[in-house]
Length: 196
Image (cartoon, rainbow, N blue to C red; front, side, top):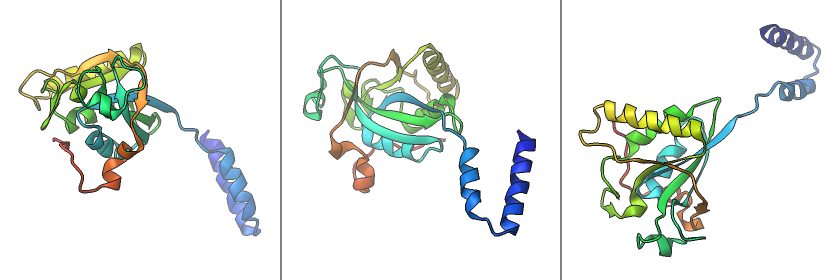
């Protein structure tokens, strides 16, 4: 692979010497790296703050806020805000496996919210504000369980972590108003911040 790159760079140099710059663009496309995308859904209180902090994390490709873990089909904010549908406000994160990995994302997750408060984050109270990791497969489940142990052993939290590790269920996108909320409303409400 290294020999191929050296040959490629030598070839580009020769092309540039003869004024054939347009060939450089075509050749670069041939050796581009394909991103390996994966998803995880996390709930840690009001999804506005969780989404905003994850948008800044290296390797995160996209985020969507929505509702998951409940029993009502096609819930809307008016339904879940009452706290009786079983849904959590959550963020579905698409990330690039080449730049980051799930363990790093989960460790970051445990820094940006308080995982020791049952059904509460800041002033927000109710099951819709619970802390949860919704895994897609057995590998993600194992990594989530390990992340809970790492967070508990970090001594960052004096109380027991109550984060649920549960199988992913239907994820319903929240209304457009909620997507990228803090980017649209920089002075908007959030109770999330990074702990050391």
